[in-house]
Amino acid sequence: MSELSQADEYLLDQIRHGAAQGWSELVDRYQGRLLAFARQKVRQAADAEDLVQDTFISFLKALPNYRRQAGLETFLFTILRHKIIDAFRGRKDNACLLVDVLKGDSGDAQQGSDIQMADSVATASWYVRRDEQHHQQRQLLTTALRELLDGYKESGNFRDLQVVEMIFYCQLRNKDVADVVGLDEKHVALIKHRCLGRIRDRVLRGTSGFDSDPPDLLLSEIWQSQRLSCLKRSTIGAYLLATLEPDWRAYIAFHLERLGCHYCLANLRDLQQQTKVETTRALRNRIMESTIGFLKRS
Ligand SMILES: [Zn+2]
Image: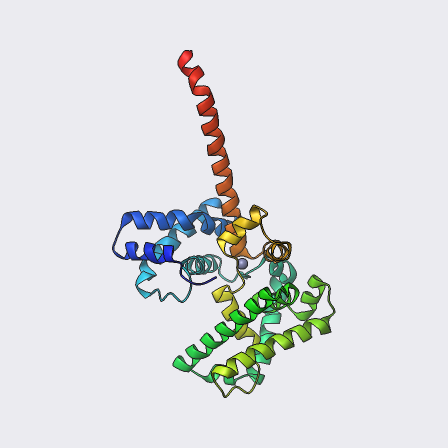
C-alpha cells in the first residue's frame, strides 16, 4: 500500500521543479479522498475544507524532507490526521470505525496503558536499540509483516488475516476479536501466537539478539503507519464494480464495512462521488445531444 507509484514519482518531479500543472494534478488527484476523510472526523463542512487546504500547504513545506518512506496518499493522510488531532486536542483518533464503536472514549485509554506496561516489562530489547539499528529493526519487521500478509492472501486464509488485522491494525482485545469473527478467545490467542512466531522467525533470519516476541505496540505502530492491509484505490474501484473473486471480495467488504477503515472508506466515498459526477455529466451530455436540435428549430 505504501510504495510510490510511477505516476506519483512523475508528479513529484514536476512539483519540485515548480510546475503549476503538476501541482494542480496532484491536488485534483487527492483532494476528494482527503475531504472525505476529514468529513468523517469533523462535523462542519467548512472546517473539513480548511483542514484539507492546510494539508496541501504543509505538504509543500514538508516536500524537501519527504523520504518516500510512505506513498503520497499515506503521507497526505498522515499530515491531515495530525491536523485533525491538533484541531481537536485530546480526542481519540482510531484507524477504524469498529474501534470507535467498541472502545468508545473511556475504555480506550485504559486498555492502551495496560498494553504499554505489559510491553515494557517483557520486551525491552526491542526498544533499547537506537538510530541505525532501530531503523533496520523496523525495516525487518515491516518486511516480515508484509510477507505474512501476502502469505495469508496467497493461501486464501482470510480468516487469520482478519484476526491479526483486528489485533494489530485495530488494537482490539482478543475477546472483541473473538466476538467479531465468531471464534472462541483461545483460538484467537492461538492465531496471534502463530503469527508472532512467524514474524519472529523471519526477523531472526536477518538479525539476532531478540529474546522475545516483538511487542504488540510496535507491530501496531508499523502496521498503522504503513497501512499494511489497506486497499489499493483500484481494488476499491473493482469492489464497487463487483468484479472481484468471492473470497477476496468478502475480505474487502470486511476491511471497508466491518472494520470501517477510515482511510479506505474515504477512498470509497470519493470514488462513489466521482461516479455520481460522471453519471450526472454523461446524462447531461445525452440530454444536450438529444435536445439541441429542437432548440435550433424553436
Ligand atoms: Zn484501509
